[in-house]
Length: 238
Image (tube, rainbow, N blue to C red; front, top):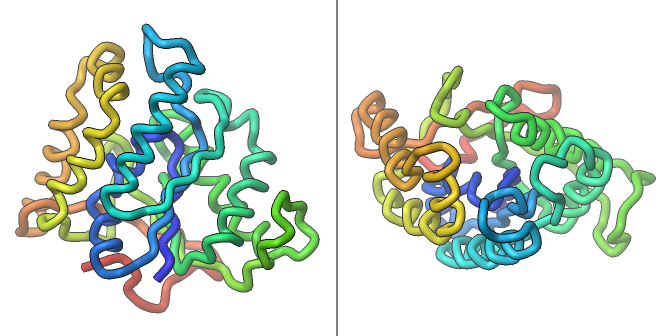
């Protein structure tokens, strides 16, 4: 299957779905990690341009661990909403290029608007990608011929998060951590800005869901309940 993961910032997909994406790659899926923001706000020492360049390389290194294609759409952090129409068009082109069987993205009720707007952009782009006269920067990509199921990852720190689909990532938790730890600059930044160790947190929350599911480590998801998007089968790994 073709799997498209759409995240807001360069480390979000690893935090929210890294173990699941690793399992998808392991079972032979073609995984594409598409990120809207360039990470330009994620440091106190480096300039915007410097940290964006650093985070691009970190994200590429992370995606390479599971053999995923990495795409960054280059919008400055905190300006996702301001670039809404531009990003719908760019994500629509990514969908036409990747032709996903399903999409993983943020939920609609996240703690920061950039994450929540990413969810809406991904949803709107699935419609735009099917419309023949919708504008495109890549006319060489054929119009997509179907809607796809959209699975939303848990909210940050599982706040107001009630997943209904569970993926056992016990066999890929180390890969998830390895992918995330490629984002060294963000780990440094979050220790300063939020006073947290995200490398530890991603295991803690996955372990908590694992205890609930009577296994080791788990990532939880919901399915977007909209016309045309309801899945007829299990798409996520078990």
